[in-house]
Length: 505
Ligand code: SF4
Image 1: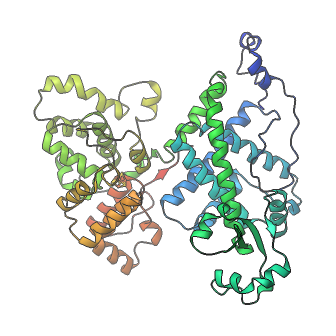
Image 2: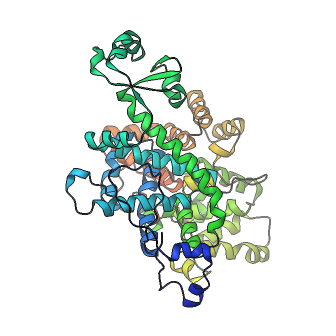
Image 3: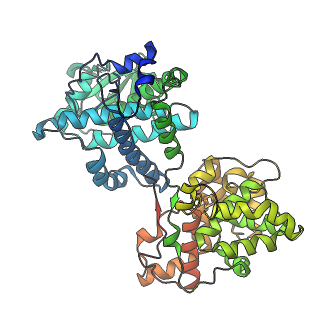
């Protein structure tokens, strides 16, 4: 699949390639002919591409998938997601219809096909990555399916050989009442709808919701439900394929050209919005200093309030807590000098000597003041996004980092919320339900809306903030900035003041 890139592989290593690597080195297959715009990605690609194409195509698809995931965190509907994704898809992963007459159709489809399989390799390694990959790929497929030309879509579905049996006109008339009853009285005239017969296990959702007529083990599925059937089939095949890929992965470890690229790709997907631009976080006129952190903490999200309270209680935080909190403080605009003063005064039970030996270096490293070249050039690490806090390094005993909505028990979470002033029973009940549904960021946004109820109403009534500026929060620093602006100024943030959370490219 990959043409050997002579710039990257020296001659000694080339001669040393074993037989498994030679399969990559000697292309024996031709490009596929892509008849359809849509793809179920059943056949792995076998023609040769360069390592540069391998990497670039995967990065382009990753941009698309990470943005789809961000839309889902923001609770956008599928129609909103499709509208939001259109320019990105046109730019990074365009797919013209067969009738468009475009000369780049085959190249577009090849890129789509290869990039899917490359990311499949990158994201097959853990269950969490597989689940997320399958979910965003299914959404991408759904968006494309809905946007496809009707005739081409039908040809694509027929080409899948999904063993759906078309219900004959006679049979449709015979069961017209039952079919209409299952459709809630729709269609008014039975001739207006096509039906397919499939084994009922294939459409559990439709059966569970009583949206189909069942007879002799077959579900009679109306044509309008075709989309959910095709997407369900896409997801179930992809899930199985990902399982198989994960079992084959250890063999890939031997290919030292691919492994670093794949590892890098999966790490980027693990933190899709990790790059937080701290230069865009300044709050003009705000007193962001060590002595003012206690006051500012009333605008912190619960994860950071919990760290702050633990620090004040114990005069200490463990490693990941310090890292999460230092990066957050850096993100709100606390400079290195003030941050060192903050930690030194907070660790009140230890001597200067111990602080300088054990903690000072780490804070400076986090700010990019010391460390390797790339850390220094990049200004240190970026503040953690909710995604990262929610999914990486769950806290152990005695640790205060993580997200309380996810990592606390319901009782402890309720006590913490009450301690920070959230006492409304309806809000607490809503948070509990969000937590049960694993919608942690929604719980956090629910609390934000409650705590800033009056300010949000005011900026909405004044028309000073648009709906976009109040959209779902997905980053602790975004939470702080919005809270601070609402509480202290109640004004519309300028472009520079708006929190800037971007995907790493
Ligand atoms: Fe913090 Fe995000 Fe959890 Fe809110 S959802 S508490 S901002 S990690």
